[in-house]
Amino acid sequence: MRSNITIRLAKHEDVNSLVVLSEQLGYQTTVNEITERLPKLQEMEEHAVFVAVSQDDRVLGWIHVFISHRLVTDTYAELGGLVVADGQRSQGIGEQLVAEAEQWAEEKGMDVLRIRARASRERAHQFYARIGYQLWKDQKVFEKYLHKSGVNKPDASRKG
Image 1: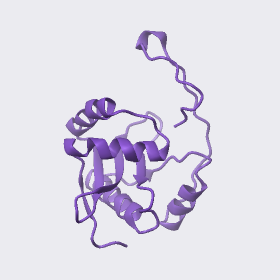
Image 2: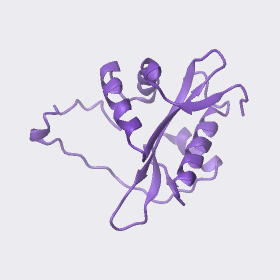
Image 3: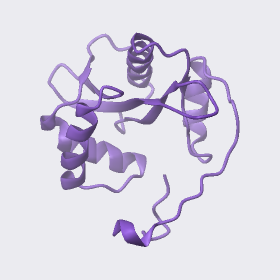
Image 4: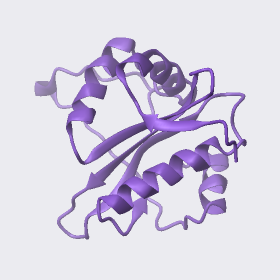
């Protein structure tokens, strides 16, 4: 594990890095979208976005963790995303980010941290298993764009 990495809460100055890293994960987003979304998440006590920062203040990865409330299960923490920069992977940064999310979840009183990973991300599956996570279930995600939302249906390349 790299000891020269600092994990801290994301801030506005990290927006450009968050966009670049999100694109590396396959999520097409813009500076305007992240600039709008990050402060909303920061205002909610049940969400946290952490970044891994190098000694020269480069953002090398990010993780989003939140509390999920469901009617039929106990409340749990869940990852909303995790990415480590190309060229920086397999150096312990992802593990440090997950450890920070786990600590945050424990401080919020959560007993479980749940992670969803796209079926095609075999390397991510291996990573999560290596750090102690077990496959709980397979599922498919269905989505419908509602006309009233004003959101245009994206092209087929958008897959979360």
